[in-house]
Image 1: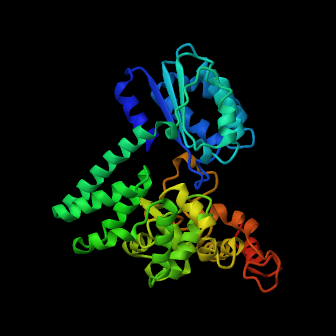
Image 2: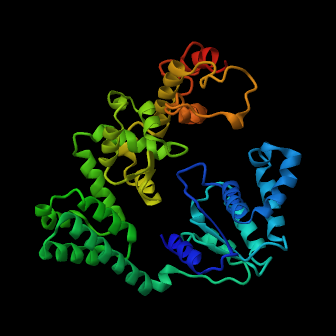
Image 3: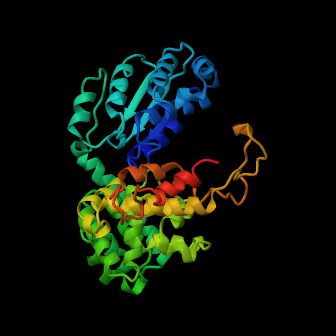
Length: 416
């Protein structure tokens, strides 16, 4: 939230010729949790804003082609391109923003070293980065020259003021939307102010829950929202466990916790058997996601954790609730459902292109897209195979034995 506000303010204040490139890391999404993705994202925005910089990419791309950005050497190539851009004399004043370094879980040391080296390379380029207070990250960034360190813990007064303003804003929104009387509005304001502990996310989650509480019940429900994120998550988990949809919600939470990127609603239906009856009713699936205790949120039709702390809670405090048979068994279930779905639906020439060698850049996804529900499974089934168990037991539905599901899929459906 802080880096979003800084980005918005910089866009208002900087000169029209200045460049602003930003990247928000997210540990739960394999597409944006690695150092290579950070550089790739920053480069893309810079080139869009100053097209002349594309020459630095063309020099490398003309020699290596598409693998330049995808193979094992992608980091080396991208870091060289980025370096040449930063040294370009035509480069305008530039702000580079990276949020949540702690959520860059692949090749973070490489990224930190790159930032340290390049942060003092040009007075025209300013880096703004954020992270949790992790000792290894702080230790590395301490080596950077010409830096200013801002610790929220050492600026508690400013944070408290900002959270208070956020509470006022959210309560006014609730009061208008739910038509609270003054007594109810003041009770909500007092409870949030007394229990927020200067945590924006806690305020946002409580307000989200209050949206579903009838006006007449709000005051007596307030005590059901304890202070502290963990206590609030525990209450949300207890609420799920006591609901009629407990098993389904826990399956969805388990799946969300172990998938390699956020899934869409259509992909979720493929991976969760209990959703088959509502496969064609996305409104019902959205409603089911809303029953998952505010752990999850929807952006468009894609499912995300509301915050990294929500996923962390499930892996630590609620592990046995959502993984009663262990994480490996959860991977096995996703694998089995993926193999079933792909075996049923995949066939040669899914997009009816009519022949081999059709230019990829000219392919247009048909509507409806026959791969929409299968896309996650097609890419990640083998990752779930690697992490599933048991891997060779004869009684396993995803056994590696001859004639079992994996063997049949590879022999009959894998290649066309």
